[in-house]
Image (cartoon, rainbow, N blue to C red; front, side, top):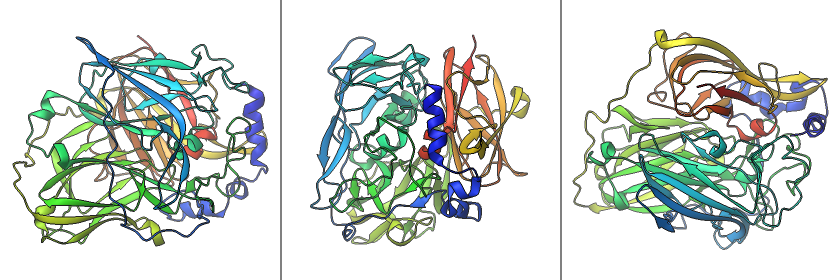
Length: 518
């Protein structure tokens, strides 16, 4: 992005005092609030919960396939959806729906996804969790301009990977089975674009996972959980400085710390309900919120007290299942869990609740348990062989501090005191090596690293938390916390980003570059 626009963003923040600029709701995060950000209230009467059935995002069939590759086509376009019962809401959607269609790939079988942009703004597509060559990873300035090449206000300056109308993204899929997702990643405007609907699942399957007797078919359910707010006319409400998303980036006061909605959507429906058999189900949980953290559990708890059996993390299966009463997810984190509804009596209503919520954001969705049904699934004691990285594996140690900071007398979100610039490189790791990154924060910062998987080594003076196991691409750093990760660099040489996945923080410069070297 041009320096003038970058400074304009800083100027839009308005005042130099860090605490005052970010607002009291943000500072509440430092005192133990569950999320960093401010609540944006809807302006229309909200519906009673559990009225509408839970939808499943449709799986997208390839337009063609050959011996090594499946080819998909997606059009990004404006559309209308019924997110609230009886209310028509304008969205931006992949194929005009939110969430976008689910893509399913096999490990080692390449996927080529053609995206056509008919929206009024440039877009960037990032496959979150993908091990992807840099030119297809969705670098924030690698813009796909609208059909016809609409004006971009200079946002593509300095990028050599800009296309008009449509482009192919190539995904080798040389990675384990996992729950990935794809979303917009345009520099300075990721948050409002995702808020408007640009997000969807991309699942990877492999032989190792297929051999396990896990629930499948109708008993495997992806759940994209996202909070949103609505204006009086039913449109999505969001506090952009420029609602056209073509001019000044950023959000108005007091939302610079993050935007929290007051409606809980699951797969694009407010507080849905689902009819389930008295059997095991696999739930693929994705926190698709811009800034809201979730603590999910079942109410009532099942007879054995541990309702959620975790089998996978961001990047695939755990070595062994872990039983939880509740699971904490920061923005962009994914957890695969098994729920045994056979432990409930037929006719029981089981609510998925968010312990980090308040008021209407406590309830997420509801399951109605039917009668007992044939269930050949089970959860094996061993799921996968997961190599455990050791501190001694790291050849380099890097310190990265994520915080709000004054820059030229104004306030921004920074990494080691630096606002994002496409020209500034924080690290140049070599492929095949493992590094130790020591991450420190001031507020809640879920940190996402492109390309390279990592494992959490420690939090503060202790080990990983109960939810830190397995290979991850996003780690939740809590206020004034130090987290160490061991990160393995494999795959492709080139420039990638790492950033806070509180999307308002990302848009306001909490992003950095690393360049992998062969």
